[in-house]
Image (cartoon, rainbow, N blue to C red; front, top):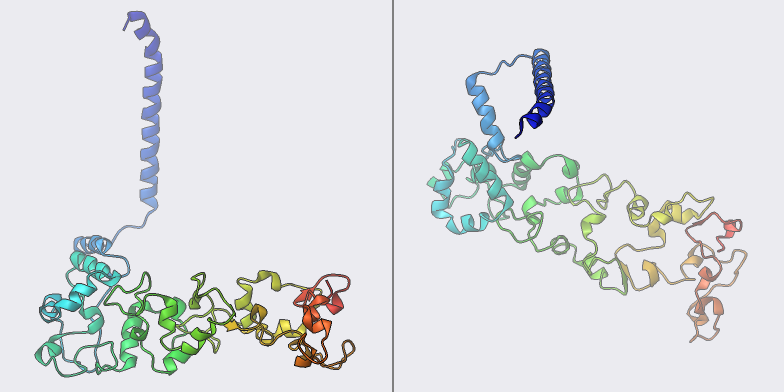
Length: 352
């Protein structure tokens, strides 16, 4: 580098050095000011080390503790190794589940966190008398563990959120256990550790009559895999009798059919009251999930009033004794197209 070039760059380098020094001094002053505003730490060295250990544990599993078993109050924990000595097959299946990954990660960070005994309770009494039911928390009908104890064990970690209304729900009142729908010991499903391969298959274990309705001509796209039972229902409990995810039937339907929500200048009373007045939600042999064909559906309310004043029956069909064009076409909807509600000037009669 020539002397002339070095001389020309020297002022620039000096200016950059001064700017960096000033910025570093300002940053240090900011850190000092922040340190003076923070409260002083009262943690001891052991508490600091314990907090660092907790940070290494898997979130959601760092507070796992041995479950309480009222049928073996004097039992104590014996550790995962003792369980695997007899239950090698179960351990192999459990290895591939989310619970296994989380509990093992937490146990590596904190040896006091149990693995098997987080759910099954202390195992010493069971190890001494493995054939006696109830000495370990089991999650099957024949395990000897009351359903209340089974669900309470699961809710020790999974309480809150969608399970807020489990207590008093129709499933809880019918003595269903979490293990009737879930299998945390094996990876049978893509999500939720379900007992079957999918949500719909799991629900169909009990609700076979509902599952058959989806085989009807008009049905929700559940068999095609475009939706599942939990899109409308919360199986863990709800404030509604059919375990709806919303407060009413209509609010549930509006989640997808928002165009039917309104508000409309002219509203159709049975529509506003409940979608179920005209539709069956799971499946129907009528068009658009109707409970009866049109115009027979409309005439459940509109018989003998103004127009039309004649009752349509099967004889009004094209193959009947008195064919009627209002039955053979779209029926009432030929003229009254905006049946869910209308904002049109001719809306009082829901005309198009």
